[in-house]
Structures are given as C-alpha cells and as structure tokens.
Amino acid sequence: MIRDNRENSSHNRRNRLLIGLGVFGVLLIGRLFYIQIIDDRYKTDAANNSMVHIPIYPTRGIIYDREGRILVGNKICYDLMVTPREVGPFDTTALASVLNIPREQIVEKMAYYRKFRTKIGYQTLTMFRQISSEDYMRFAEMKYKFPGFYGQARSVRQYPYNAGGNLLGYVSEVDGDFIKKHPGEYRSGDYAGKTGIEAAREEDLRGVKGDEIWLRNSSNHIEGRYKDGELDREAVPGRDIVTTIDAELQHYGQMLMENKVGSLVAIEPSTGEILTLVSSPGIDVDMLADIGSHYSEISSNPYKPMFNRAVQASYPPGSVFKLVNGLIGLQEGVLTPETMYPCSQGYHYGNHKLGCHAHKSPINMEESIMMSCNAYYCFVLKSILENRKYDNIDDAFDKWNEYVHSFGFGEKLGSDFPSELGGNIPTSALYDKRYGKKHWKANTVISLSIGQGEIGCTPLHLANLCATIANRGFYYIPHMIKDSEGVEIDPKYHERKYTMVDTTNFKKIIHGMWRGVNSGPGNGGTGWIAAIPGEDVCGKTGTAQNPLGADNSVFICFAPMDNPKIAVAAYVEHGGFGATWAAPIASLLTEMYLHGEIAPERKDLEKRILSGNLMDRVRIRR
Image 1 (cartoon, rainbow, N blue to C red):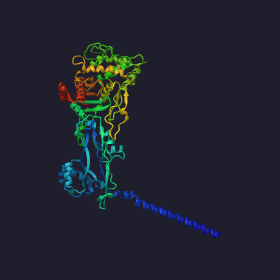
Image 2: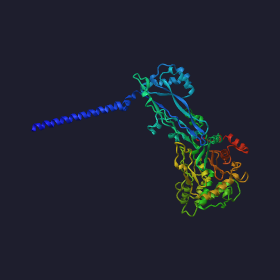
Image 3: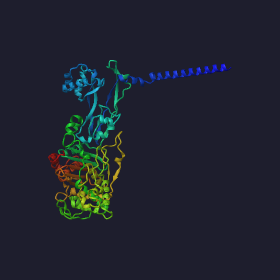
Image 4: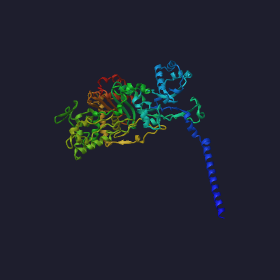
C-alpha cells in the first residue's frame, strides 16, 4: 500500500513538471512569434546600424507685423552634404566651379575628413551651408560626377522690410552649450533663434523636424528606402507669429535715427502694444540671414549694434522725470496746480546751485512743466521728503521709492522681449550706507528731482511712462506679440497695472505737457518744435547729463490728448537739449503714424533730422 502511494506521488510530480515545461515552451514560442512577426521594434533596433536617418527640416514660422505684412519670411537654399567614406576620386576644380566657391576650400575640407576618416566612419556631414538655388541646380545636373555628395534643402530667413534687425533677432546654428541647455531638442547642424523675437518665440517658430530612413547594404552603400518610407516622419512647420510692430513705422523710425546713437520706442497706450522699437546703430536685416558671415564685423563695431539700447541701456531720464515727481507731490498733498515757486536761474542751497535756464519767476505747476523749470522740482522733491506726516526722511524716501516703482521704474517691466533690464531707483538704505543714517537730507539727493543722480532707466521705461500718463494712471505691460491662431500670449499683457497716483492728478499734469508743445515759439514752451498741425500733442523735453560728453537729448509725447493712439519716447545720446533732436524725432514719428505723411510745412524739419549725423559726438567706451 505504501509502495503504491510513493509511485503515485512520483508520477504526479513528473506530470506537473512536464506540464510546467510545456507551458513555458508555449510562452517562449509565443513571445518569439510576437517579437519576430508582430512587433518589429527589435528588428528595427538590430537594423539601426544599417539605417541612415536623413533629417527633414521644417519651414520656420513666418513673422508678420500688425497689418499682416511679412517682416520675416523664408526662402529655400541648400546645404551640401557629404559622406566621406563614399567619396571616390573626383575633380575638385569642377566641383568648385559648379558651387561657385574657391577650390582651396574643398581641398581643405576633404583633407580634414581624410585625417579623421576612422572617427567619422560612415557619418554624413554638412560640408557647405546655404548654397543658393542657382548654384545647387548646377550641382544637381552634374551630381553623378560627385559620388558621396548630395544636397539637402533648408529654408533660411528672408526680410521684405528693413525693419528692426535688433528687434527681429537672428537664427544661427546651435553650439555645444546650447544643445546641453536644451537636452533632446537639438543636435549638431540644427538652427535656433538666438536674439530678439526669433529667440523669444523659438518654441513656436521652430516647428518639428521629420526624417527619411534609408538602408545601407553590406558594402555600406545606400540601397533604398527603409520599408518603402513607411516609418518616415514628415516635418511639421513652425507656427506663424503676429507682432504688434508696424513695419512701415519701424522703417521710418530707423531712418530718423540713422547716424545717431540711442533709441526710439512707440507704444499704443490702450493696449500696451509696441508699435516701434528702434535701437541705433542697429543690425541691418541684410546681415541677419547669414549672420555667421557678418558676426565678426558686427561684434567688432565700436558702436555695439548688437546691444539693444531700447531695453538694455540704463540712462538717466533727465527732466521727463519731473512729471513723476510732480504726480507724487500732487498725490501726497504737498503740491497743487496753483503752487508757486521762484527760480533765479536755478535752485540755490548752501554754497551750491542746481542751474536752470532763464524764464519768468515765480511760476505755477503747469508753467513749470511747460518751461521745464529745474528749481521748481527741487522745491517739489524737498517738500515730498520733508513731509511732516513721516517720522523721518528714510520713511518719506521709502514712500517716494514705492511711488516710483508703481510707474514701472526700478524693475523689469516684464515685456516679452528677451534681455530686458530693470534700471535702477535708489533706496534710503543706499544713502544711509553712503552718508550715514540721519546724516543726509533732501538737498543731499536733490538731483533726483530732475531725473539725475542714481536714477537709471531704459527707453522702454520712458515710453511706458508716457503711455501711463496718456492713460491717466495705468499701463499695460509693453509687449510685441499678439494673440493669433495657435499662439496665445500671457494673460498678464491684458491686465491693467495702476500707479499709486489718482487719475484726477494726471489731468493736471497733462495740460502742462500740452502747453509745453502747443504754446508756440517764444512763449516759454520747451517742446514747441514737436507741434503737429491739427493734433493736440502732449510732450515733455529732457536734457540728461552725460559724463562722456554732450548731454543726452530726451523727449516723450503722446497724441491725441484725448483717446491717445500713440505714446513715444526718443533718446539720443550726445544730442544736447531735448528739443534739438529727440523732440523732432518723436513728433515726426507720431505724425507719420497718425497722418501717414509729414505736413509740407514740416518737410524742412524732416530733412534736417534725416540728414543729421551725430556720430562724431559720441565717445566710445573702450
């Protein structure tokens, strides 16, 4: 009985083992069937060593202006590709003639490839970039003579308008550092936007690369498409971008600023949309499509054309900043439109004097804006900082600082333009450290009253100040991109940002700006040259000290006075008085935008500005 039980137990174990082996065998066969017949990923991986992936570059998105005019388009050119291992003996002179390049360049390249033949292997390399369509067509007709060479189509940028090289930015080949910063997104030979709008909207503009897959045979020669192109991927074109820029106005602004150093910025106050953003000297758009060929020339230019002064230069605002101090004084209750202050060609304190030009005295607030009186705003700042409702000057100054920041100064405005800087607004802590706590007073920092001293801002800040005044106390963050199909801008650009000054106080300031432009020559208005026939222009001149030579010329204006359509800031280095260069430039740009032409009686003024050359005044920082 015991023996029978042992035999049954042994038989059962053997059966279970056989069943287990059978199940395992079925699973193994099924898996192999799946891998080899159904799922060909492993075959594809195994074949990768014999597969050649040829990238298909997408068409980069088009950049339009606000009216639908093309600012940046595309044209087709070709890169000459080479697989050195497949290159046999060929006539270098013939290839040079076909491609219209020096023969020495071909010889040099091939010598390099032969030197690193083992390392290169069967890689395909880009030998020459951006061959014209005409040169490529000649090559295509004789391609059979040059085994191992082929052309690869690529779109490059084209610029119908000479409008905003610095603004638009350029596209160039990515380097190792760029690839590391964008892992998995780019590889050697790819292009990306490096500056301006091209960089700011790279993700939208670049599109998605496709590729074609070809097979090599055992002799390492390409024999045909892999799976008849079944696994090829089509390139996805980049998204088009619609900007806020007016192409015609941008071009005109560049003409006005030619042979001058500085910036010209125009904003639509009701939206915060940037109409014009000129940095001068700038990069000509003809250089952008092939920036590599011109990079050395541009980078060695002492006037630094790649430096975008509109958003990166920190300037003293000069007398246009009087408007900010005036508004703060009104809000703080230490100033009224009727307040009178004297001026005996300047503000006198102790043994010091902050000078001013000759004009009648005393004057009220409107007249102080119209005449740009320095002494008046020294008294205004003094009254702000000595306001008895504050326990000490530190508290009063910190409140002043808070007001100024509410206008957007002392920080980045948050525009969608890359590399924007924030400028500088001093704090009480700075002066406590410099002079000692309780050892400084209003007269110590009195230069802040007229936009000098430690104040620094960009021309974009000044244009935004002008838009804020035009709006009677609020602004939209300046921006260059509009909502369009497939592209949404950040909601913050549609939000109003209010200053700490009541709307009613702006009306009091604006009339003084109107008188400054429209009072006529000889009546005290410093900005009379900016008057436009048929328009109520409101403006303010500024003359900012420049330690490197002649003063900087500054002017801001908006028009019309009611329901304004444009706010402009012009900043001309070494331009002298605000009325000499900046005011005419800003008002001509305003007139062109509102009327589409310059009035006959202002043609002589336009001619003077267009032909003016201030480059010999500029001292270059070494």
